[in-house]
Structure formats: C-alpha cells, structure tokens
Image (cartoon, rainbow, N blue to C red):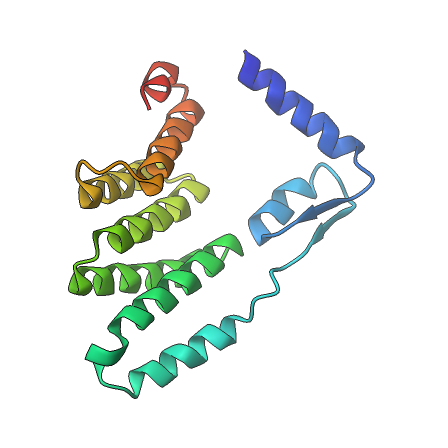
Length: 171
C-alpha cells in the first residue's frame, strides 16, 4: 500500500512539474506521456571516444591491453545502458565479462554481471536479470562488497515489482 502511495505521489509530481529532464530514451518515452514538457538531456560523454580507444587497443599486443580493453568495454556498456541502447550495451558488457574472465578478476566479473542484469531489468525481463544477478553473486563468492549490496538490492526491487514482498524483504 505504501509503495502504491509513493508511485501515485511521483506521478502527480511528474504531472505538476513545470519541466521534466530525463537522461535516457526509455525514460523520455514514458515520462513524456505524463508531462509534455519533458526533455531528453544526453550525457556529455562521447561514445566515439571509447570506440577509438578500442580500435587503438586492437593494434597492440593483447597482453598489454586486456585490462584496459576490459575497462573500456565495461564503460561503454554502462554508458549505452544508461542511454537506452540495450543491444550494443549487451555486446560490450559480454566482452567486458569475457575479458574479466581472462584476467581472473572476480570484481570485474561481478560488475559486468550487475550491468547485464540492469539491462534485463530495464527491459522487464526479470528472470534473465535474476539469472545474471546470481552469476554476479557467484563470482564474488562469500565476499561482501558494494557490488554484492547492489546485486541484492536489484533482486529486492525485482521481487517488489513482481509482488513478492516477502522475498524482497529477505534481500
């Protein structure tokens, strides 16, 4: 009941606002239905800058660039996710995960899984999101990190959206 009240209040605020700014295409599409004075403000990051870095890294020996390439793919995946470009985001996030596996970097593996889970959550593909959350938690093992907390929080949000409040509270 409290969740519905918060959703209702957020909707009323959205309708009453003089102007609404959003940072992604999907948010723009949903919010403009409730307020015609909604504007999309994209991030000031140049995606092409990251792509140039990847092309440059491809010219160097992999042993010299694997860690940087992993970070660039992860950053591009996050940026593309936040701008609603989910398919190219998934490509970069999967490559970031593959490189994290090569590097045996459990934290980077978990972060890539977290962002892949975000993509599926944003697309309301909750079972896939939960699967990727599980993979991220598995990569972290028993360690409790900020990524662990985020993965569990996303799980709780998904369970709440699905009406499984008891399971959400467990997270």
